[in-house]
Image 1 (cartoon, helix red, strand yellow):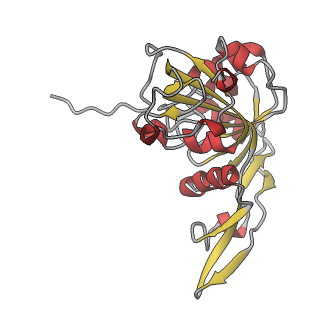
Image 2: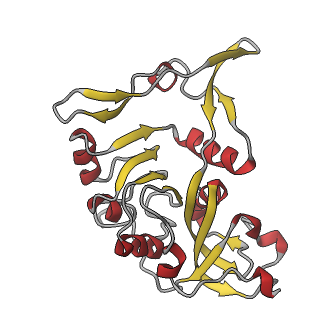
Length: 253
């Protein structure tokens, strides 16, 4: 069992060898399930030139927004970017490249990458700039488009058009789990399960922060959401980690 122990002492040690220019797949759905301690450790380490694949880029002072605000991210591949004003500023100023991807397509691109599937055809995006090209990826800072998305292959199956989407793999995956064991088997809580398992699969090296660390074998096999074969490092961050809500909507009275 000793050979299966993937636990590292702290977040700093977990990300210490992530180099400048690395590509990252980062878990999280809104602000739910963000690997905050790993993000903070990467920020403190000073790693820069990052290309990040994540459903969104956090907000101005939380999640991936911390790395963005520090100028560490050069490219984002995301499906939703509407809650981060610094993201908007950097994108329009030509300081950030953005590859917008439909949410379900992004999830499948990550899953396919982890499953060893090079590409797949989907109906999503047919007849739009997603397939036809022309979506701005980088602005020139003066209102013009410096780089636009290229057209994608469209093929007909059973009389219907489908667009070809390539899988995503990254150098490193950073994920957050509710519980994990020393062999890297993970359990996610609620909406944190949306993108964290997929991001983990897509990373050639996967680093998981877990709120609760248990011994190998303590998680019943039927309760495992992601098997340890996809996970290379585990670090315990405790159950008292701060968690935020992206947009709180309440009713008066």
